[in-house]
Amino acid sequence: MSTGQAKSPYGYRYIGTHRRTKEDPRFVTGRGRYAADIALPGLKHVALVASPHASARILSISTDAARAMPGVHYVLTGEEFCAATDSLAFGVDAPKLTRWALAREQVRYAGEWVAAVVADSRALAEDAAELIDVEYEPLPHVTDPEQAMQDSSPLVHPAHGSNVILDRHFVWGPVEDEFAKAEHQIGFRSVCSPLMRARAAASMPVLGVCARRRPPAVSPSTSETRAPLSSKMRRMTASRAGAWSIM
Image 1 (cartoon, rainbow, N blue to C red):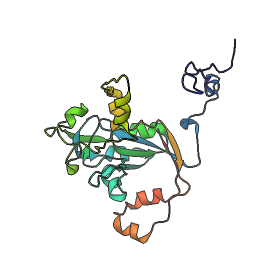
Image 2 (image 1 turned 120 degrees about the vertical axis):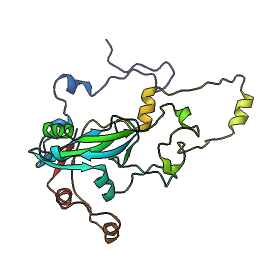
Image 3 (image 1 turned 60 degrees about the vertical axis):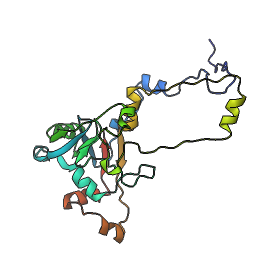
C-alpha cells in the first residue's frame, strides 16, 4: 500500500489531498503530553465558575465557604478583577462596549466566567469553585441573530444602543461588472448552525493553559488610573516564582 500523498483531483497541492497526520503516533502510543502533565515549581491551579444563564444580572457572589477551604489561596470575582484591569479590545470602533475575562454585574452568555479560585491542586480548586454561591436575576434574551437585530430585542450591551456591533459592506474589484458578464448566476442564503453561533458569542474554549507570571513594571500613570488590588492579591500577582494552571 502506498504511503505517499494522494494527488488532489482538483489540481491543488493541499486542498482535496489525502495527507497523513503527524500527531497521532505519540497519542496512541501513550507519549502525548498535556497541560495536566506539566508541574512547574510553585504551581497553583485555577478553577473557574461559569454562568448557567444566557443573560442575567449578578445579584451577589458568596465566596466565604470557598475561601475557608484548606489549600485555597484566593477567590477572585469579576468586581475586583474589572476594577484592576482594562476592558479587552473588540477590534471594532465601539468605545461603549466593554468585555472582561470575568463578568461584572451582568452575564451575557451561558458559560461566561464570573469567579476564579486559586488552590494548591486542580481538585481543590474545582471543589472550592462548587462552593461559590452566585445569585442571578435572569434577564430576557434571544438566540436568533436576525431577531436580535430587531429594535424590540433586548440589548446585550445597553450602553452601545444596538445588538449590531459592525455593519460593513466589503467589495474588492469590479464585482457587478463581472457578474454582468457571467453566463450564469446563483444566489444562496447561508445560515450558521447553533454551534457556530455559540462560538461566535464566545471564542472556542481553551481546554488547558500553563503559564509563569512575570509582571511588567507599573508606570505611575497606570497606578493612578487603576483601582488597587487587595494586599493578598497584590502579593500573589507580584510573585515571580508562581506559576498557574487553568483547566
